[in-house]
Length: 283
View (tube, one colour):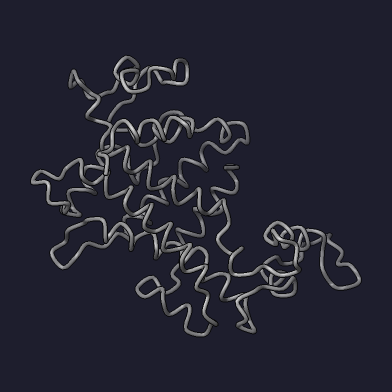
């Protein structure tokens, strides 16, 4: 994902307060959108199940429930919610956004921590993981789109989308009143080119990837210390190679556990998938 796009999503996620306690209220003024709701439910189930597998790293009795405070303590001991020190993804360096990226990731972590809610006993399991991502998707996707949908028809016109892309100084609207940037922003989302952004187009691939990446990285972070077989507080390149034998030069020389999440984020996405497959419990 382009680093600028990722930071834009982070900013939205970090500042959104749209019905955080009851996201279903966002649909009250809208017509039924069953296909979009199926998409959101499916993605929430996938990402919630993934992050819950991460929490199982500290599930001592194997009942599928862990104290939320212990999850946060484990993550924070590995750099979660702190401006990290260490490598950043190559695209952040290339675009000159390393500092902004590290600060953005720390803000995102803090937002995840604030949105995380345990049950009445302060425990986390798969249900709470699913609810975390479902709420986030409503805030990132349904909320902003529903606000733009002024006639409540579950599809967005160019006129409606243009209100979210204000005209900048120096831009000249065309004879219909739209700038080139507004038209391009609309066209990127109108994937079937029918002149509207329908509810099926609201959940874009970039957001899908963003949610899955959050879940996978947090889950890996919970389990990464199991690779520190010599208990020296770091996972060496040799220890990483036991589960990533083909990664070669893509592996760092060492991952200090107190900054693990920063190092994990810097790895290529295909290695995230390989790490989660190697470390996380199977169904």
